[in-house]
Image (cartoon, rainbow, N blue to C red):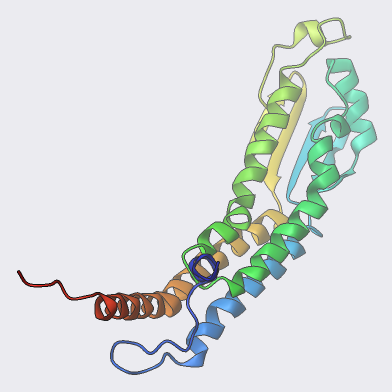
Length: 236
């Protein structure tokens, strides 16, 4: 059991390095502080919109806008749903319902897991922070899937459904569906999540720099103790 705990959490910090010195305390505090900052950034991103889309149409000269948060959609949702009805598309709120229902709990758990990674002083720290590191990519992949489903689930029996071919709304940039135009872009929440991922990568660098020499030193000590306890071979 002790070996398993040491493998996952890492060696104790009282291991003397090969040159007889010990690493400065700051070497261990820096990665812990960096991972904590990353956790706070990730949680902060939940309060900001991650993605937005503006729809333009002749009857809406100022355009219609929706902002997508991790757990809700805000903006001119009702008006856009009315337009989508004529196109034979599902309401905006119908896409990603499961994801939005668990998003806050999931991100809070990821943030807590990231904060807890400060206690993992081995290579397993990379696995612990992986969900937070991949969050922006997971969001983009899920958004792509939802937009694809919207554009490929047109009801041909709707008012304008028969005149519109299946399409893929752009995640970023301008698009066009019939007489309607769309402008999509990532928002501040997504960039904060990206910043959190960058901070995690920096934290992993400092984590490795702090703990790998300690792990290597303890490995050498264990090898030396094992060699000393071996019974010498009996000469014939």
